[in-house]
Length: 249
Image 1 (cartoon, rainbow, N blue to C red):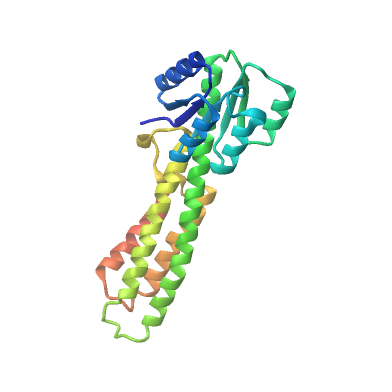
Image 2 (cartoon, rainbow, N blue to C red):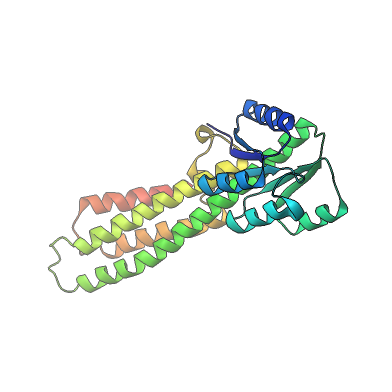
């Protein structure tokens, strides 16, 4: 599995080729372009975890490329590598999403350390954004579903299945499991571990995990409150499994 997808923009062929090969050897997927226009086209066409760019190249006068990327890529981190450092460009980069400002020739171990850190932080940010988006969607969807279940309860006989409850439970469990997946991705990004080394249960007590745990507890409460209305062994087993999940995290 790739450690991250990187775009390198530099008009110096030797640096471009050698740096790309070294990073590929470390497990990164690397694309290369020779000017700012090519970089913008590549970023618009595919998701990247990091941009490494030269300052002195076509289309990047006054940090134009860096500024445009900052506005179009949702926080994509940028490492600037230049053979012509200046106080002006260094100061200007402070206000932009620049993860590092390095001077050629670059010691590769130092570059690798900066690259690994920038990619890990960006993936953590993306995972957190995904989890927050999913939780917001869950809240927006669960409220009307709860309303439909509540309105259905007094109308039908207690022994009759409730389609509204089935919809409510399916919606809840889908979002719970989706949130667990998001939190697993976040944990791997934060810890720098592989998929086989991480488990979502390790994260349920993190700050964002508290929101997920509350959602599971809410589901258990609904199942408990409606157990008298729905004589269903399946729903009872489901409640027990969710309770067991919380007990062992």
